[in-house]
Amino acid sequence: MLLILLLACDPKFQAWIDSDGDGYGSTEDCDDGQASVNPGMEERCDGYDNDCDEVIDEVDSGAPCTEDSGA
Ligand SMILES: [Ca+2]
Ligand SMILES: [Ca+2]
Ligand SMILES: [Ca+2]
Image (cartoon, rainbow, N blue to C red; front, side):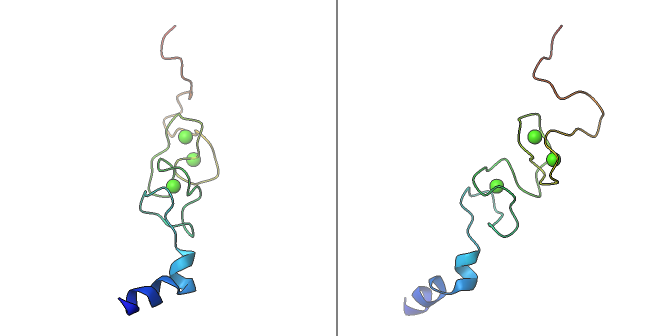
């Protein structure tokens, strides 16, 4: 029990916080408040930079990223 408390107080462990629970801590996750945004995520048309490459809603296929699927 004491060991766990000591680890919790360790700055190294405090620096790694996964606020959104997506498996990526604040040191590697570019948005630790969005579970659909982390370095292991594929880009989606949702207005977020899901894959953390600093480009929002880029699509490899070249298809336009719009919410309009019809017309
Ligand atoms: Ca995240
Ligand atoms: Ca991106
Ligand atoms: Ca996106």
